[in-house]
Image 1: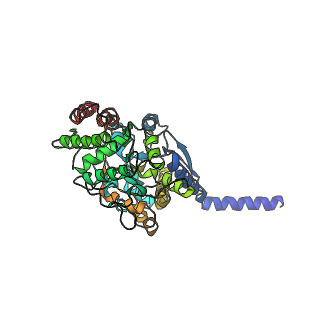
Image 2: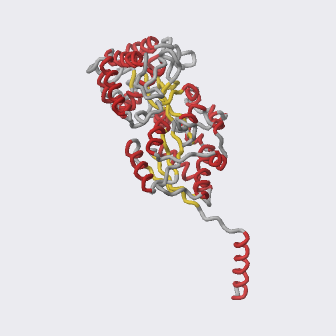
Image 3: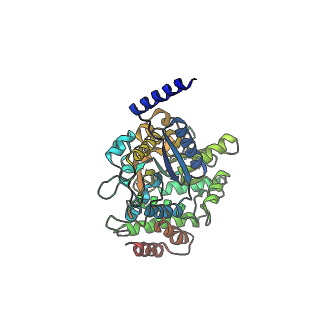
Length: 428
Protein backbone atom coordinates (compact mmCIF):
# COMPACT_ATOMS: atom_id res chain seq x y z
CA UNK A 1 0.00 0.00 0.00
CA UNK A 2 1.41 3.43 -1.01
CA UNK A 3 1.59 6.34 1.40
CA UNK A 4 -1.16 8.16 -0.57
CA UNK A 5 -3.46 5.11 -0.36
CA UNK A 6 -2.76 4.72 3.35
CA UNK A 7 -3.55 8.39 3.97
CA UNK A 8 -6.78 8.12 2.00
CA UNK A 9 -7.81 5.01 3.99
CA UNK A 10 -7.01 6.74 7.26
CA UNK A 11 -9.09 9.74 6.29
CA UNK A 12 -12.02 7.51 5.33
CA UNK A 13 -11.81 5.67 8.63
CA UNK A 14 -11.83 8.98 10.47
CA UNK A 15 -14.94 10.09 8.57
CA UNK A 16 -16.74 6.83 9.32
CA UNK A 17 -15.68 7.02 12.95
CA UNK A 18 -17.03 10.54 13.30
CA UNK A 19 -20.36 9.51 11.81
CA UNK A 20 -20.81 6.39 13.98
CA UNK A 21 -18.63 6.63 17.09
CA UNK A 22 -17.64 3.25 18.50
CA UNK A 23 -19.01 2.42 21.93
CA UNK A 24 -16.40 1.66 24.57
CA UNK A 25 -16.48 -1.83 25.97
CA UNK A 26 -18.12 -1.98 29.39
CA UNK A 27 -16.40 -4.10 32.02
CA UNK A 28 -18.75 -5.20 34.79
CA UNK A 29 -17.17 -5.95 38.15
CA UNK A 30 -19.14 -8.83 39.68
CA UNK A 31 -19.13 -10.35 43.16
CA UNK A 32 -20.90 -13.57 44.11
CA UNK A 33 -20.81 -16.15 46.91
CA UNK A 34 -21.35 -19.32 44.89
CA UNK A 35 -19.20 -22.36 45.63
CA UNK A 36 -19.54 -26.06 44.82
CA UNK A 37 -22.07 -27.03 42.16
CA UNK A 38 -23.61 -23.57 42.23
CA UNK A 39 -20.22 -22.04 41.55
CA UNK A 40 -19.49 -24.34 38.63
CA UNK A 41 -22.79 -23.48 36.97
CA UNK A 42 -22.48 -19.74 37.57
CA UNK A 43 -18.96 -19.67 36.16
CA UNK A 44 -20.27 -21.43 33.05
CA UNK A 45 -23.00 -18.80 32.63
CA UNK A 46 -20.48 -15.97 33.01
CA UNK A 47 -18.17 -17.58 30.47
CA UNK A 48 -21.02 -18.00 28.00
CA UNK A 49 -22.10 -14.37 28.44
CA UNK A 50 -18.58 -13.12 27.82
CA UNK A 51 -18.26 -15.27 24.72
CA UNK A 52 -21.52 -13.91 23.29
CA UNK A 53 -20.82 -10.24 24.01
CA UNK A 54 -18.00 -8.12 22.69
CA UNK A 55 -19.34 -4.85 24.14
CA UNK A 56 -19.82 -6.06 27.74
CA UNK A 57 -17.47 -8.28 29.71
CA UNK A 58 -17.92 -9.62 33.24
CA UNK A 59 -14.95 -9.73 35.62
CA UNK A 60 -16.15 -12.05 38.39
CA UNK A 61 -14.89 -12.67 41.91
CA UNK A 62 -16.30 -15.29 44.28
CA UNK A 63 -16.19 -14.41 47.97
CA UNK A 64 -16.93 -16.40 51.10
CA UNK A 65 -20.62 -17.08 51.70
CA UNK A 66 -22.49 -15.60 54.66
CA UNK A 67 -21.28 -12.98 57.14
CA UNK A 68 -17.91 -12.39 55.38
CA UNK A 69 -19.66 -11.57 52.10
CA UNK A 70 -22.17 -9.14 53.57
CA UNK A 71 -19.53 -7.50 55.77
CA UNK A 72 -17.38 -6.85 52.70
CA UNK A 73 -20.38 -5.41 50.85
CA UNK A 74 -21.07 -3.00 53.71
CA UNK A 75 -17.48 -1.77 53.99
CA UNK A 76 -16.91 -1.51 50.23
CA UNK A 77 -20.15 0.39 49.66
CA UNK A 78 -19.14 2.96 52.27
CA UNK A 79 -15.88 3.79 50.48
CA UNK A 80 -17.06 3.32 46.91
CA UNK A 81 -14.93 0.28 46.14
CA UNK A 82 -17.61 -2.34 45.66
CA UNK A 83 -18.71 -4.24 42.56
CA UNK A 84 -21.00 -3.01 39.80
CA UNK A 85 -23.22 -6.07 40.27
CA UNK A 86 -23.57 -8.57 43.09
CA UNK A 87 -25.58 -11.58 44.12
CA UNK A 88 -27.76 -11.09 47.19
CA UNK A 89 -30.05 -13.16 49.40
CA UNK A 90 -33.50 -11.60 49.57
CA UNK A 91 -33.70 -12.62 53.22
CA UNK A 92 -30.93 -10.04 53.80
CA UNK A 93 -32.96 -7.25 52.21
CA UNK A 94 -34.04 -5.60 55.52
CA UNK A 95 -30.44 -5.47 56.75
CA UNK A 96 -29.21 -4.18 53.39
CA UNK A 97 -31.75 -1.36 53.51
CA UNK A 98 -30.85 -0.53 57.10
CA UNK A 99 -27.18 -0.36 56.14
CA UNK A 100 -27.97 1.69 53.02
CA UNK A 101 -25.94 -0.47 50.62
CA UNK A 102 -28.58 -1.06 47.91
CA UNK A 103 -29.66 1.18 45.04
CA UNK A 104 -33.26 1.11 43.76
CA UNK A 105 -34.06 -0.85 40.60
CA UNK A 106 -36.25 1.46 38.54
CA UNK A 107 -38.78 0.80 35.79
CA UNK A 108 -36.21 2.14 33.33
CA UNK A 109 -33.66 -0.35 34.67
CA UNK A 110 -36.08 -3.24 34.18
CA UNK A 111 -36.91 -2.02 30.68
CA UNK A 112 -33.18 -1.95 29.82
CA UNK A 113 -33.02 -5.60 30.94
CA UNK A 114 -36.12 -6.53 28.96
CA UNK A 115 -37.94 -7.41 32.20
CA UNK A 116 -40.97 -6.38 34.22
CA UNK A 117 -42.13 -7.16 37.75
CA UNK A 118 -44.94 -9.33 36.37
CA UNK A 119 -42.33 -11.70 34.93
CA UNK A 120 -41.56 -13.01 38.43
CA UNK A 121 -43.34 -14.99 41.13
CA UNK A 122 -45.12 -12.55 43.42
CA UNK A 123 -43.50 -13.80 46.63
CA UNK A 124 -39.99 -13.27 45.28
CA UNK A 125 -40.77 -9.77 43.98
CA UNK A 126 -42.31 -8.70 47.28
CA UNK A 127 -39.24 -10.00 49.13
CA UNK A 128 -37.08 -7.84 46.83
CA UNK A 129 -38.85 -4.62 47.83
CA UNK A 130 -38.50 -2.17 50.65
CA UNK A 131 -41.37 -1.27 53.00
CA UNK A 132 -42.45 1.54 50.66
CA UNK A 133 -42.70 -0.80 47.66
CA UNK A 134 -39.43 0.26 46.02
CA UNK A 135 -37.66 -2.59 44.20
CA UNK A 136 -34.05 -3.09 45.28
CA UNK A 137 -33.14 -6.40 43.64
CA UNK A 138 -34.13 -8.69 40.78
CA UNK A 139 -34.93 -12.28 41.91
CA UNK A 140 -33.01 -15.04 40.13
CA UNK A 141 -34.34 -18.17 41.79
CA UNK A 142 -36.45 -19.58 44.57
CA UNK A 143 -34.59 -22.10 46.69
CA UNK A 144 -36.07 -24.01 49.58
CA UNK A 145 -35.67 -27.14 51.61
CA UNK A 146 -37.29 -30.22 50.12
CA UNK A 147 -37.80 -33.78 51.32
CA UNK A 148 -35.39 -36.23 49.70
CA UNK A 149 -36.23 -39.91 50.07
CA UNK A 150 -34.53 -43.26 49.59
CA UNK A 151 -37.08 -45.57 47.98
CA UNK A 152 -35.47 -48.80 49.18
CA UNK A 153 -36.53 -48.24 52.81
CA UNK A 154 -40.17 -47.68 51.86
CA UNK A 155 -40.72 -50.61 49.50
CA UNK A 156 -43.84 -52.60 50.29
CA UNK A 157 -45.25 -49.83 52.50
CA UNK A 158 -48.13 -47.45 51.95
CA UNK A 159 -45.63 -44.64 51.44
CA UNK A 160 -44.72 -45.57 47.85
CA UNK A 161 -47.29 -45.56 45.06
CA UNK A 162 -47.33 -47.97 42.10
CA UNK A 163 -44.80 -45.76 40.27
CA UNK A 164 -42.40 -45.72 43.21
CA UNK A 165 -43.18 -42.13 44.19
CA UNK A 166 -43.56 -40.91 47.78
CA UNK A 167 -47.16 -40.71 48.94
CA UNK A 168 -49.31 -40.84 52.06
CA UNK A 169 -47.54 -38.23 54.20
CA UNK A 170 -50.17 -35.67 55.15
CA UNK A 171 -49.39 -35.03 58.83
CA UNK A 172 -46.65 -35.21 61.42
CA UNK A 173 -47.97 -38.60 62.55
CA UNK A 174 -47.81 -39.90 58.95
CA UNK A 175 -44.21 -38.73 58.64
CA UNK A 176 -43.28 -40.30 61.96
CA UNK A 177 -44.90 -43.56 60.86
CA UNK A 178 -42.85 -43.45 57.66
CA UNK A 179 -39.66 -42.93 59.67
CA UNK A 180 -40.54 -45.89 61.89
CA UNK A 181 -41.17 -48.04 58.82
CA UNK A 182 -37.77 -47.02 57.48
CA UNK A 183 -36.13 -47.88 60.81
CA UNK A 184 -37.74 -51.32 60.79
CA UNK A 185 -36.48 -51.78 57.23
CA UNK A 186 -32.89 -51.15 58.27
CA UNK A 187 -32.37 -47.38 58.08
CA UNK A 188 -29.83 -46.43 60.75
CA UNK A 189 -30.95 -42.79 60.84
CA UNK A 190 -34.35 -42.47 59.17
CA UNK A 191 -34.20 -38.67 58.90
CA UNK A 192 -31.13 -36.55 58.38
CA UNK A 193 -30.64 -32.80 58.43
CA UNK A 194 -27.93 -30.61 59.94
CA UNK A 195 -29.05 -30.92 63.56
CA UNK A 196 -25.88 -29.22 64.82
CA UNK A 197 -25.75 -26.44 62.24
CA UNK A 198 -27.53 -23.09 62.13
CA UNK A 199 -29.10 -23.41 58.68
CA UNK A 200 -30.36 -26.96 59.07
CA UNK A 201 -32.01 -26.38 62.44
CA UNK A 202 -33.44 -22.99 61.51
CA UNK A 203 -35.04 -24.12 58.26
CA UNK A 204 -36.77 -27.13 59.80
CA UNK A 205 -37.91 -25.09 62.81
CA UNK A 206 -39.15 -22.22 60.64
CA UNK A 207 -41.01 -24.58 58.31
CA UNK A 208 -42.82 -26.26 61.23
CA UNK A 209 -43.64 -22.85 62.73
CA UNK A 210 -44.91 -21.49 59.41
CA UNK A 211 -47.00 -24.58 58.70
CA UNK A 212 -48.91 -23.82 61.90
CA UNK A 213 -49.52 -20.27 60.72
CA UNK A 214 -46.98 -18.92 63.20
CA UNK A 215 -44.98 -15.70 62.90
CA UNK A 216 -41.37 -15.48 64.04
CA UNK A 217 -41.14 -11.68 63.89
CA UNK A 218 -44.14 -9.43 63.21
CA UNK A 219 -44.05 -6.35 60.99
CA UNK A 220 -43.97 -4.25 64.15
CA UNK A 221 -40.93 -6.13 65.43
CA UNK A 222 -42.59 -8.36 68.03
CA UNK A 223 -40.92 -11.75 68.48
CA UNK A 224 -43.33 -14.72 68.28
CA UNK A 225 -46.48 -12.66 68.87
CA UNK A 226 -49.66 -14.12 70.31
CA UNK A 227 -50.14 -17.85 69.79
CA UNK A 228 -46.88 -18.05 67.81
CA UNK A 229 -45.01 -18.70 71.06
CA UNK A 230 -46.97 -21.92 71.65
CA UNK A 231 -46.53 -22.83 67.98
CA UNK A 232 -42.76 -22.41 68.30
CA UNK A 233 -42.77 -24.63 71.38
CA UNK A 234 -44.72 -27.24 69.41
CA UNK A 235 -42.14 -27.11 66.61
CA UNK A 236 -39.32 -27.71 69.10
CA UNK A 237 -41.30 -30.54 70.72
CA UNK A 238 -41.62 -32.28 67.34
CA UNK A 239 -37.92 -31.94 66.55
CA UNK A 240 -37.07 -33.15 70.08
CA UNK A 241 -39.23 -36.26 69.65
CA UNK A 242 -37.45 -37.07 66.37
CA UNK A 243 -34.19 -36.87 68.30
CA UNK A 244 -35.33 -38.92 71.31
CA UNK A 245 -36.72 -41.66 69.07
CA UNK A 246 -33.33 -41.95 67.37
CA UNK A 247 -34.75 -40.94 64.00
CA UNK A 248 -32.33 -38.06 63.40
CA UNK A 249 -28.56 -37.67 63.92
CA UNK A 250 -26.84 -36.31 67.01
CA UNK A 251 -25.36 -32.82 66.50
CA UNK A 252 -24.68 -33.43 62.80
CA UNK A 253 -22.84 -30.71 60.92
CA UNK A 254 -23.88 -30.03 57.34
CA UNK A 255 -21.45 -32.29 55.48
CA UNK A 256 -22.07 -35.19 57.85
CA UNK A 257 -25.84 -34.84 57.48
CA UNK A 258 -25.56 -35.03 53.69
CA UNK A 259 -23.22 -38.03 53.89
CA UNK A 260 -25.80 -39.96 55.93
CA UNK A 261 -28.23 -39.75 53.04
CA UNK A 262 -25.85 -40.19 50.12
CA UNK A 263 -24.28 -43.25 51.81
CA UNK A 264 -27.72 -44.88 52.08
CA UNK A 265 -28.04 -44.78 55.86
CA UNK A 266 -31.01 -42.39 55.97
CA UNK A 267 -34.41 -42.85 54.41
CA UNK A 268 -35.19 -39.13 54.37
CA UNK A 269 -33.24 -35.90 54.16
CA UNK A 270 -34.58 -32.38 54.69
CA UNK A 271 -32.16 -30.16 52.84
CA UNK A 272 -31.96 -27.49 50.20
CA UNK A 273 -32.66 -27.97 46.53
CA UNK A 274 -28.98 -27.13 46.04
CA UNK A 275 -28.10 -30.75 46.90
CA UNK A 276 -29.93 -32.05 43.80
CA UNK A 277 -26.70 -31.82 41.73
CA UNK A 278 -24.93 -33.95 44.35
CA UNK A 279 -27.56 -36.64 43.98
CA UNK A 280 -27.71 -36.56 40.19
CA UNK A 281 -23.91 -36.57 39.86
CA UNK A 282 -23.64 -39.60 42.16
CA UNK A 283 -26.42 -41.32 40.27
CA UNK A 284 -24.85 -40.61 36.87
CA UNK A 285 -21.45 -41.88 38.03
CA UNK A 286 -22.95 -45.10 39.38
CA UNK A 287 -21.78 -44.32 42.93
CA UNK A 288 -25.30 -44.10 44.39
CA UNK A 289 -26.61 -47.41 45.64
CA UNK A 290 -30.33 -46.62 45.72
CA UNK A 291 -33.19 -44.95 43.88
CA UNK A 292 -34.16 -41.55 45.21
CA UNK A 293 -36.68 -38.77 44.77
CA UNK A 294 -37.35 -35.28 46.08
CA UNK A 295 -40.66 -33.59 46.81
CA UNK A 296 -41.96 -30.40 48.38
CA UNK A 297 -41.91 -30.77 52.17
CA UNK A 298 -45.35 -32.30 52.84
CA UNK A 299 -48.12 -30.56 54.75
CA UNK A 300 -47.18 -31.85 58.20
CA UNK A 301 -49.18 -29.24 60.11
CA UNK A 302 -52.06 -26.91 59.16
CA UNK A 303 -50.74 -25.14 56.05
CA UNK A 304 -48.76 -26.18 52.98
CA UNK A 305 -45.71 -23.98 53.13
CA UNK A 306 -41.94 -24.27 53.43
CA UNK A 307 -39.07 -21.96 54.34
CA UNK A 308 -37.59 -20.37 51.25
CA UNK A 309 -35.18 -17.69 50.11
CA UNK A 310 -34.04 -16.30 46.77
CA UNK A 311 -30.73 -15.48 45.21
CA UNK A 312 -31.10 -12.14 43.47
CA UNK A 313 -29.18 -9.48 41.58
CA UNK A 314 -28.48 -6.15 43.25
CA UNK A 315 -26.54 -2.99 42.42
CA UNK A 316 -24.67 -1.70 45.47
CA UNK A 317 -24.12 1.88 46.52
CA UNK A 318 -20.74 3.25 45.40
CA UNK A 319 -19.88 5.67 48.17
CA UNK A 320 -20.88 9.17 47.10
CA UNK A 321 -20.67 8.34 43.39
CA UNK A 322 -23.53 7.42 41.05
CA UNK A 323 -23.03 4.77 38.39
CA UNK A 324 -22.54 6.04 34.87
CA UNK A 325 -25.82 5.53 32.90
CA UNK A 326 -24.10 3.49 30.19
CA UNK A 327 -22.50 1.24 32.83
CA UNK A 328 -25.86 0.82 34.56
CA UNK A 329 -27.52 -0.14 31.28
CA UNK A 330 -24.78 -2.71 30.73
CA UNK A 331 -25.37 -4.12 34.24
CA UNK A 332 -29.07 -4.48 33.51
CA UNK A 333 -28.24 -6.17 30.20
CA UNK A 334 -26.26 -8.76 32.16
CA UNK A 335 -29.19 -9.30 34.55
CA UNK A 336 -31.68 -9.70 31.71
CA UNK A 337 -29.44 -12.22 29.94
CA UNK A 338 -28.98 -14.25 33.12
CA UNK A 339 -32.74 -14.40 33.69
CA UNK A 340 -33.34 -15.60 30.13
CA UNK A 341 -30.73 -18.35 30.63
CA UNK A 342 -31.98 -19.38 34.08
CA UNK A 343 -32.71 -22.93 32.88
CA UNK A 344 -28.98 -23.55 33.21
CA UNK A 345 -29.12 -22.33 36.81
CA UNK A 346 -32.10 -24.59 37.44
CA UNK A 347 -29.73 -27.46 36.75
CA UNK A 348 -28.36 -26.70 40.23
CA UNK A 349 -31.74 -27.67 41.70
CA UNK A 350 -33.20 -24.18 41.93
CA UNK A 351 -36.60 -22.99 40.71
CA UNK A 352 -36.28 -20.03 38.34
CA UNK A 353 -37.95 -16.90 39.71
CA UNK A 354 -38.39 -15.72 36.11
CA UNK A 355 -41.73 -17.23 35.11
CA UNK A 356 -41.11 -17.51 31.33
CA UNK A 357 -38.38 -20.04 32.19
CA UNK A 358 -40.17 -21.62 35.18
CA UNK A 359 -43.25 -22.21 33.03
CA UNK A 360 -41.35 -23.47 29.98
CA UNK A 361 -41.57 -26.99 28.57
CA UNK A 362 -37.85 -27.40 29.17
CA UNK A 363 -38.23 -26.79 32.90
CA UNK A 364 -41.35 -28.99 33.06
CA UNK A 365 -39.18 -31.87 31.84
CA UNK A 366 -36.49 -31.23 34.45
CA UNK A 367 -36.69 -33.65 37.38
CA UNK A 368 -36.94 -33.61 40.28
CA UNK A 369 -37.26 -29.80 40.01
CA UNK A 370 -40.63 -29.93 38.29
CA UNK A 371 -41.99 -32.24 40.99
CA UNK A 372 -41.30 -29.75 43.78
CA UNK A 373 -41.79 -26.55 41.74
CA UNK A 374 -45.15 -25.99 43.44
CA UNK A 375 -43.24 -24.62 46.42
CA UNK A 376 -42.64 -21.43 44.43
CA UNK A 377 -46.25 -20.50 45.09
CA UNK A 378 -46.31 -21.84 48.67
CA UNK A 379 -43.00 -20.54 49.99
CA UNK A 380 -42.71 -18.55 53.21
CA UNK A 381 -39.76 -16.17 53.21
CA UNK A 382 -37.89 -15.14 56.34
CA UNK A 383 -39.35 -12.29 58.39
CA UNK A 384 -38.64 -8.82 57.06
CA UNK A 385 -36.31 -7.93 59.90
CA UNK A 386 -32.68 -6.96 60.28
CA UNK A 387 -32.23 -9.83 62.77
CA UNK A 388 -33.54 -12.48 60.34
CA UNK A 389 -32.26 -14.03 57.14
CA UNK A 390 -29.06 -15.79 56.13
CA UNK A 391 -26.22 -15.56 58.66
CA UNK A 392 -28.38 -13.53 61.06
CA UNK A 393 -29.14 -13.57 64.81
CA UNK A 394 -32.15 -15.79 64.03
CA UNK A 395 -29.81 -18.41 62.53
CA UNK A 396 -27.46 -18.01 65.52
CA UNK A 397 -30.37 -18.60 67.91
CA UNK A 398 -31.25 -21.78 66.03
CA UNK A 399 -27.86 -23.38 66.59
CA UNK A 400 -27.17 -21.89 70.03
CA UNK A 401 -30.62 -22.38 71.57
CA UNK A 402 -32.93 -24.60 69.48
CA UNK A 403 -30.29 -27.23 68.70
CA UNK A 404 -29.42 -27.82 72.39
CA UNK A 405 -33.15 -28.05 73.13
CA UNK A 406 -33.81 -30.77 70.58
CA UNK A 407 -30.87 -32.67 72.05
CA UNK A 408 -32.46 -32.56 75.52
CA UNK A 409 -30.48 -29.77 77.18
CA UNK A 410 -33.40 -27.30 77.37
CA UNK A 411 -37.15 -27.69 77.52
CA UNK A 412 -39.05 -26.39 74.49
CA UNK A 413 -40.58 -23.68 76.71
CA UNK A 414 -37.20 -22.50 78.00
CA UNK A 415 -35.67 -22.61 74.53
CA UNK A 416 -38.40 -20.49 72.99
CA UNK A 417 -38.26 -18.03 75.89
CA UNK A 418 -34.49 -17.70 75.43
CA UNK A 419 -34.88 -17.28 71.66
CA UNK A 420 -37.45 -14.52 72.18
CA UNK A 421 -35.20 -12.70 74.63
CA UNK A 422 -32.12 -13.06 72.43
CA UNK A 423 -33.79 -11.77 69.26
CA UNK A 424 -35.56 -8.96 71.11
CA UNK A 425 -32.25 -7.80 72.53
CA UNK A 426 -30.84 -7.59 68.98
CA UNK A 427 -33.67 -5.43 67.67
CA UNK A 428 -32.91 -1.74 67.20
